[in-house]
Length: 150
Image (cartoon, rainbow, N blue to C red):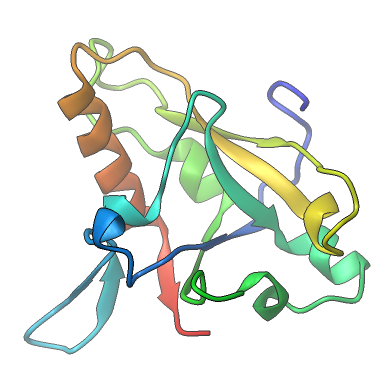
């Protein structure tokens, strides 16, 4: 994994998630007025390394469509730009104007065929509580990611 890698700002990252798992219930919300689906924080599952995503440019260089990463039960997809992720400020950390996230390349071994496109969204800030950290993740999901149906 490269720290603050030199990925292009226009880079699109793709996230797959399981909208049927009760443990991940908080993934998508439908705007009652428009019917548009929006991603929620539950779709972005962070561990100590970050939140797994897949780089669109690497998928394309491998001759793969983003749909390749959608495998049951992780069939819903969402996408965001690197610049959108890295320019987001959430107001939940002590430095409320600091950028909250970065995208770092983290290619995995070749199987399955899309693993070289793996990257991580990582937290850049320290939060006073896990609740504030989860709220920041919710803002990232809602503001930066666009929901796609696989």
